[in-house]
Length: 252
Length: 289
Image (cartoon, rainbow over all chains, first blue to last red; front, side):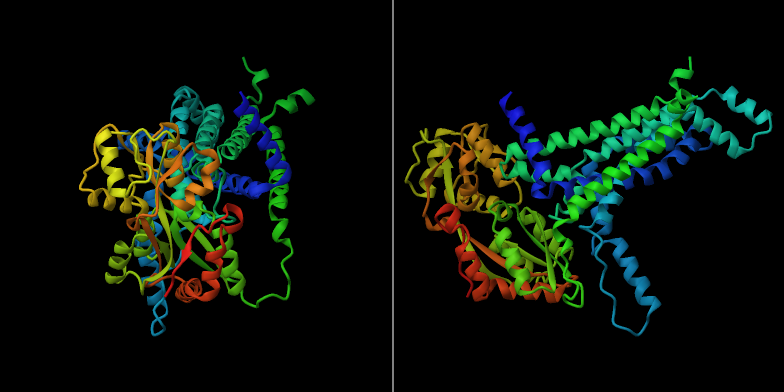
C-alpha cells in the first residue's frame, strides 16, 4: 500500500510544484491526442457511415481491413510512419523532386525534416485511431433499423438528410467509437516514442515520460505520472460518458 | 424546461468544450511560464535545431543535463534535441539522415559507419568503463577476478546473468567479452532482457543476478539497487565514446560545431567535472586527441 500512497503523494507534489515540466507534458499529451481524435472523427465517421449503410462491391473486404487496422499494434504504426517520414523515405524524396522541379537552376533542395516533431506524432496517432473510430461507427450505423431509413426516404429525405438521421440514431455507438479511439491514443507509447523521439520540451508526452523515468529507475516518479495519466483519462471519459447519456431520461 | 435543457446533447457538448478549453489554456499557461522571459532584442535569427542521436546509457547517466546547456551557451544559434536510443538505432537514424550528429560507443561499428560514407568523420570524445556487478554474497565467487575468469566461473556455475540483448554499445561489448572468454552464453541462466541499462540493472537486482554495466549508469541508480561492484579495472572493460557528424544532415554546420566543441578544451572540461560533486568521482574520462 505504501508504494501507492507514495506515488499519489508524489503526483500531487509534481502537479503543485510543476516539476519535470509536468504541466507541459500534460498539455502536449492532450493537444496531440485531442487533435488526432478530431481528425480521426472527420475521416472515420463519414467512412464508417458509408461502410455501415451502403452495400458495395468489396464491402466485406473493406470491413476486414478496418477490423485488422483496429488490431494494429501501435508500435508498428509508428514504424510505418517513421519509414515514410524519414529524410531517406518516399515522402522526402517526392518533396525534394517537386521542389527541385519547381525551381530549376537553383541549388538542390535538402530533404525536409519531418520526424521528431509534433506533426509526426499526430500522423501516427491518426493512423492508430482512425480504424477504431471507423470500425465501431460502421457497426453502430449497421445496427440502425433499415426501416427507419427507408421511411425517411419515402417521406422525401435526401441522401444527406438520411445520413444525418442515421448518425443521430446511432449516436451512442458513434460516441463509443470516439471514446475507443481516444482511449487507444492517449495511452499509447510505442509509436510516439519512435516518431517523436521523446525530446524534452518538445515531443515528450505523458506515456514516453513514464517510460523514461521507469528506465532511469525512478519508479515513484513514473508511478506518479501514471496516476496523473489515469486521472486525466478518467475525467475525460467521465465527460464523454455524460455526453453519451444525454437525453436518456426522456427515452424508454 | 431547464431539466430538458440539461439533458440535451448540444448543451452538454458546449459545456465540455468550454471546460476543455479552460483547462487546456491553464495547463498551457503553467507550462509556458518559464520561457516567457524571452528577451526581445536577442539573436536576430531563431536558433536552428540540431538533432543529436545518442544512447540510453549516456542519457541515463545525466551527462546531457550539463553538456547540452554548456554547448547551447557557447553556441546560442543552435538548440539541441537529444534522441536517446540504443547504439544500433542511433546509427540507423544517422544512416537515414534523420539525426545530425551521433554520440555513441561502439568503435568498430562507428568506423564502419564512416567507412560506408554515412558519417563525415569519427573522433574520440571520452571513455568510461564497464564493470561486472552482482549480489553482495557473490554465489559464483567472481569478486576481484579478471573479466575472462569471472565470466568463465559464471558460465560454469550457471549463475543468473542478465544481458542487454539489444543492439546497444553495451551489448556489443558484452558479446566481445564472452567471445574473448571463448564462451557461447546460452541456457536458462542467461537472461536476454532486450531493454535499456537501467531496466537490466533493476532485473539483476531483483533476480538476483550478475550483469555487465557501465559505471555511470550504475552509480546513478545505485541507491535503488542491491548490487555490488565485483569486477573492475580490467583493460578490456574500456568503453570508448565517439562523435560523428552525419553526411547529408539537415543541419551540417550545427553537427560540425557540436563535434568540434565536444573535443575542444571547453567541452572536455565539462565532461571531466561531471559527476565529481554528486558521486565523488567523475563518470566519464575525456580523451579527445
